[in-house]
Image (cartoon, rainbow, N blue to C red; front, top):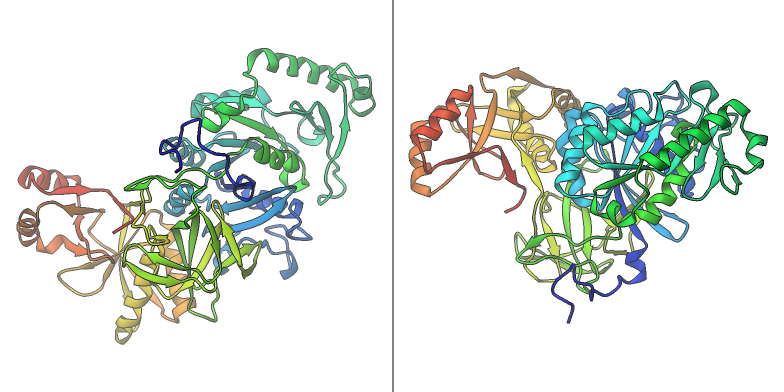
Length: 538
């Protein structure tokens, strides 16, 4: 019998197949260089031969991880995509998240499916607002964080300043894993503090792995051959200061989420990326325990369990397919297995699961705890669903947030209202938007977290369903889920018919115009609870 306390020292080692997996997300502010870094990961993992630049011309050089038309047009990642690739003896499962703040909800949910996060910071801008928000979520879940300070080949700020800013803003200890030599035009490379190596950047060829020179400490005469005297002097001085002022790397503190190691580099020049990957392999966590009801799920359990953290519709425009992204929580999954869909209690044969290798999908013959597989389905699977080998477990903690912007939605052609309903329901299940059907009147009210999402929705409904739609302003400013004893809720609903709607799960939603509306309900209906989030489950 397994030890029931997961944190106990008697817990057995993970099976080697599971222990070699590292499942992580990349978080950053838009434009810090996350998509470029993702490309280079794939390049070093041997998954793609040539890293295409996001904005370069020509089809051959399109980024492989952005597949939606709008992502290509705007050069932003809108939907989180998952990729698996091997690096040395490790298996990396990388979940790319949209950095754009208008898509934060997708990102929050993605963070429930990973064991660690790589935070990308722009060397010139430091910690930006979106990074701070995403970081908060990592904090709530005590996720281990590894930091990559990008764009060192452009004019960037003083290294100590960047480190101070992270420590102050994010209240986490920072320990340098590498130290930059020079900055901007003079950026030569880094001194690898963990392995005592000199890493030199090759500016001529962006797809070349940096040259490495092993050295014996900072007083090694070999350094002078590669680094000009004034820069060497500065390097030695800074590294000595760093060693005195900053904490040394404590692997356990990293796993606890209280310390982050920082690497410096330039993703576009393929520099510093390999060191970061070695850091993820060496200091990143193995697949972790998932919190669930009525008990936690341990990765080493023999029985398979997994949960859906994202649904992506129409990944292949030729087929109206939906792919549910499933994070494997335990066990060894084999293609064709019958799993129980806990919400409906129905068995489900998973016959064509896919793995995403860069932009290619291939059938997954098997998967282990920590892996992320895509399950094509026709709408049976929703965000928050758990699949198990029979046991009624439900993974908890996948949030759904109240939208901050609400607009009415109508089809350009009134006869196509039914088609519109189908399209909107699909996006609601995908988690791309909240769709509310008011009890009185026709039409739908669509709620999103950021204004850019309306554009994405309109363009996707037109592209994928051939339906021109228009969004119109409404008087509502937010929505709250109403719960409580049936009788109290009925009384409340009958008295406020004008402002009541149902979401795509059929739950009761109260549409509010002013904060005053909420205060009034709290005062007049003490038994009714209005909440701004709802757990994505049954």
